[in-house]
Image: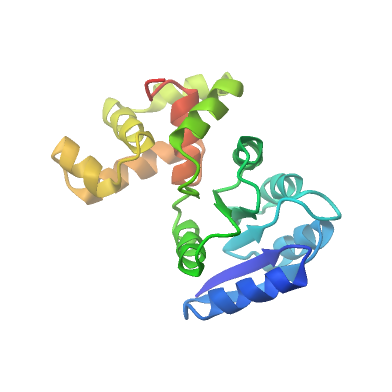
Length: 218
């Protein structure tokens, strides 16, 4: 069962999300928070798999709260799905910078929200389809990789660099396997080792890292 916490200052939004997610059958909403301080406290206490996070709310904006939750986590932090009515680039940049694993708009279809939660719970980050790789590329341009990333990049094998680069270009594991004439399980193993070396926890952050470190043509 995937455990989820809903963070939004509007009770009607939280109620709607709860109904949508719990109808999926494999998702349980274990907590709700209407402000930032409550979200931080409950995340620390309950360790949900996924947090659906609003951007604008009292008691700390969602991006600041996300950053605190990720920093405070004892072990692997929850995957944070930023859910907002705003599709402005700056919100996407802020979500990526704060450590969120995904970004989706509130006017998405119910099945898209369910799919997003499932993807994040399984270690797959996502950005709403309305937000393209152009946004990630621009984010990487505005916020260059820290110098420590250069050392991590040198730890990758040639195959790991190749796979991370193809992932950042939008290819799935199956497509990467076909491109390189290897098994999908081999792609997954190489990708897992690469993520451990560069210190990221999901595919979205891996893509951001790849753009920041020049593994994708600009």
